[in-house]
Image 1 (cartoon, each protein chain N blue to C red):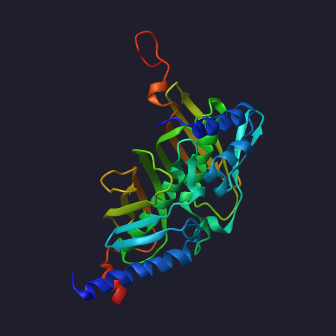
Image 2 (image 1 turned 60 degrees about the vertical axis):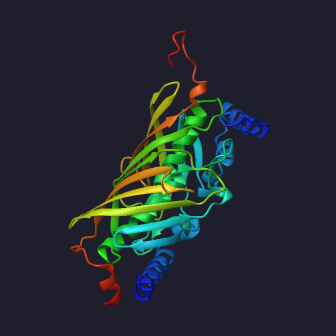
Image 3 (image 1 turned 60 degrees about the horizontal axis):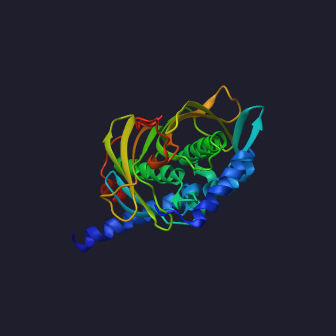
Length: 161
Length: 164
């Protein structure tokens, strides 16, 4: 990867981070951090905090925390696939909790918009803690795109426009 | 998982609160439920859940809508508390899966929810959750979830060793 590409990726992450923090009070409140954004893919980090625990007996993070993280990541994945931020509405979201998420460790959530039509975005997601190949949950979601005709555009081009 | 004194104490707190049908105490015992601001009260036999509006719950400032994750998280939290009340063993049920359909934009107002336990076996429970704002008949979202109620080794078995 050239220095120029590297900078573009950093700038892109920065831009999405600013927008996430500015426009999504709940992500700010939860402390979501952008790790990576590239065409149609977004990785967000949920830093661990004691208030996120759902099962104190076994020391587990509440699964509701995972829903919020993946929902936020899905939104950014769709925006990055669209190359712009527009109003989108979640139609449905399904979570499968594959193994417990343990307290004390951050959560990383990756969402991938794998199909974009004029009206609908299909997204799948994975959440893990220490190792990506040992996911704690997987997610599947569909989003309705805003009323304006949505077109797939390259994010880099939009960023430079 | 190793069973410790601390775990036993935590379970006992849940057991006591569930046994006393003390929903405020149960919510207090689940850190994320109290962080979110979950509230619940009995209306007759039914548990009615609410999440009072706060600015930090907004997901989209432009259209003033609550975060989709807040709506889902609220409903899942509600289902957990509902099962804790029904099952007074003091075990926090383990979510297996959760599926939500968003029907309308959740406005910057209070959220309400009720849960219906459609199936409750020894090992697994299926819960359906409805969430609304102004009018119970106009839900903003519906969801369903499966929960494991007990670790496998603690599931009661009959003489043939089958889970009952």
